Image 1 (cartoon, rainbow, N blue to C red):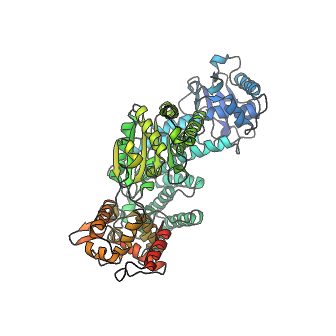
Image 2 (image 1 turned 45 degrees about the horizontal axis):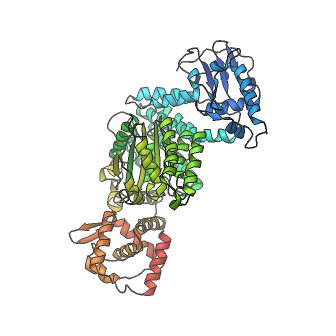
Image 3 (image 1 turned 120 degrees about the horizontal axis):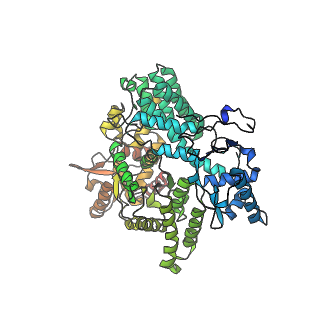
Length: 637
């Protein structure tokens, strides 16, 4: 990394001269240098001046400059500047006050310069910072991450280290409590964490265990819940001959997750711990211990899914080359689609990406999922706020009174913002739960942004992609997530668990927890209820059929189940075929069986757990049986 020569400055503002050296790579190029990490600092190469936070004309002018810098060259209206500067309580003549602050900044940054040559340009009644006339460390950080997508580990390592080296403190630390700075920090943190984790993985690939340990420590110091960093620390410690430290890293990770989130570690973390305990020789090999590729490229600590991730990466690369692509990721409940989406987003580091979930409040307010993903990717933005208002107004209208023109106006605003800020990758979880208006907006965006470098990756339940509102969409690809394969578990040293779990991620995670907890060889009540809850998504009638089928000898016959339930075989066979399509049941030579034996055990155990075991082979029509099934269904849901 090239280190800039130290320039003399008027005041160190309480800091050492060495700490104030601006360390942006790439030379002077006659451009102003701006540091946003740590305390704001501006270096003028021509005048030899270094401006600190107290050299910018006061607190408000400094904050105005910071707001413009965070917009990354985008326009900010005077109204929004006033709202952020005075916390939504601007003075009556805020416009004149904002103009005076801009004048102060122009004179300070470029004494004797005119408005047209200034770094702060007037733009449609607002202002923007001319990023093209300066070198900003936050922009350089993102540029370096964008260049890390390479098959050469050392090149990736050099760029990651250079990017991380730019982060010499908290973003704009002179304003620790301002809401607009907090939003920017939250948007930046995932990129920094991704860089630290990737740097740790690169170091493991290159055989630098000490370096990997340092990057893992930096990541965990910022967010102790990042399991990937704990896994890097575990592997690096083990390779350095410090097995006790590796075990302690796992135990800290486990304790933190249980205390903070009430959950245990993920299966890939537990499998790594088990490999350390049995002194697995593969842990000493350079590269990620659970790498899914055979080359020496930067590997991801992620169990299985190598083929699916590679397919998604191909779609994303095609989209970012200039062809909008929508990819649907399908799978049944508990199969790990949300975790897959999280991993996929981590792999697009360097490209602006955002995430949203339709399973919560997102399904209630139609535009929320798309807007949340955009806001997550872009941070605070006046144009996004305008689009959100337009979509919310559209959603509030009576559908019978809403005409096509009002839809087009709102949707066109959305498409225009997406085109302007491309390239982008947006991740939307549980799109099948989204409001129809959200899907319509996405379909319009797909048509109007067809030539833009944008990828949208959305998960949905198996079998919903071609039905209902989702039929409006034209996905460029559909990725089907099933259970992990025997090979996936073999490579992770979990061969013995395949027969019991069928490779189902939910069951695998529960089995791993019981393994390191030395618990009984059965699934927990929590796993039973969750798995039964996923089964209940098939509907009350089919859920009742599944409960009854779990009590029958396996595999079961259509005639026997129909007799137990007291229903016609003709109607029941359609339900069973639908459950096969949903990947809950499967057909065998002898009849029907559960896709996973553990799923049958879970349904049966759920009844035993709530103290009401029903022998459906003796009766199927009693009121008590119906009441018990309803109670079980409510608990599972």
